[in-house]
Length: 200
Image (tube, rainbow, N blue to C red):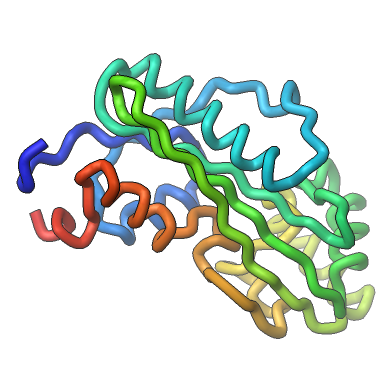
């Protein structure tokens, strides 16, 4: 791969947040949502789970594409050792937020890069997030916006959920769903440095 050559890049996710972050990184890419059944992966350890899912998603898209570079990711929220996924209902979103209020939790994202031909990398990023105390009325009002329903842990830090967060320790973009610095390091290892191609 020459220094000016950019292979096809596939994002194995339909997440609008991950699309936005990849655009922020200046990378040309095609959205190619993975067809992996996430429910089939029952892994108790959250780091193993997100890495396994991220790699499975990237592999599946890489096989379909047959060439280029596939990027997979998976994010979970962990509170007191328990994984909080996307809430299944407004009531569950309220339950999650009541648990997180005034407490610290971890956001863990697995990231995988698979290059056509079989080269694979997988890693994870962990960010500690601390919520401010929340009243039941605040939680109900936030849930009523609909924002929590498609997000791990029941909140989106890039939206109104920013009003819930007192502080973070670690990568902000990891909380949104794609740790960009980690991804840039992984891509650079396969000759695809975002800083060197974003101007093309």
